[in-house]
Image (cartoon, rainbow, N blue to C red; front, top):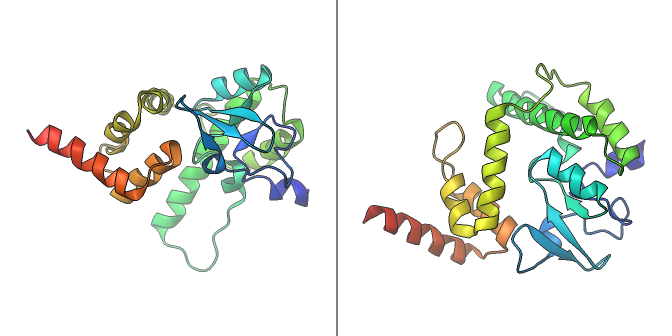
Length: 205
């Protein structure tokens, strides 16, 4: 049990090293390729595909490909606990993230993947603690994940334009935007800053 809990933060799945100390475990540690959404892992000499939907994750995984869990959906958040006297806002943020994560993995489990069985059993157990309500991802959230995948494939500028506005219509924090850009495209902070200035100046014309 303790060993399973230690691996709940891994982003990489369907690899012989996925749940061992031999695996980098982080998408950001992998080498970018000329294909957006695909990176190379030196530990197993395989390409890894970044998946944004449960369907893609299971389909590619069942086909024998190494796959990566999307940013923000690693199951480690399902065991996160609040200590002390957290604010109502902090509690709601964590619970919302846990519910989104639980729903994402519920969809994965319903698709009956042929890999990661031991970990999926533990994730299923942890997911049962969440007040899931509707057991499926909402149509709006599923649509946003598909747009995110398309933006990643289109390149940094498309991703910047998409994520600078949150799904709730509010403008995203620039640091959050740069974190996502660096995560997917291995950009430096200066390159992110230059990209942001270029996009904003184009729209100001």
